[in-house]
Image (cartoon, rainbow, N blue to C red; front, side):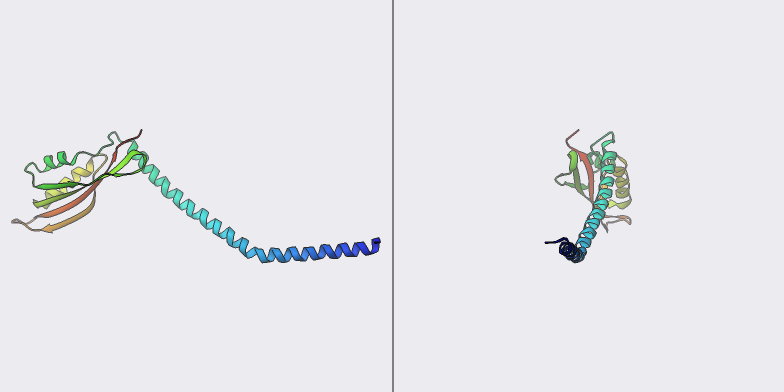
Length: 164
């Protein structure tokens, strides 16, 4: 084959290969763009999760710094607030959480109590660290005097049960 025929043939082959590669790239570009967008969305979701976990880890660190890792005993708080009794307490099974922490919960039922005293009790329970937190409250006005009634409270508190 002589040089005069080889050069146009090589140029034609190069042009054909270029056209095929361009067509292939144009055909694949939408899929590649969609993949990049999906990955960017995944990264954005991971950033949101990371920020959420940062807040959770900060909360755990704050609880780890508390001098007491156990909430005050409810029977003691109830006896101090209501020496005459009249409060039914039902403790729930602790739920294990991360790093040796557990969630304790109790349901307290106050029958025919002055509701203001129930409110003061809640303030006392929330003052200690770790605090008892009110997560559910049902109040029914009843009784012989105004301001008395039945209250059912569900309280939760974090407690360190194991770990460093």
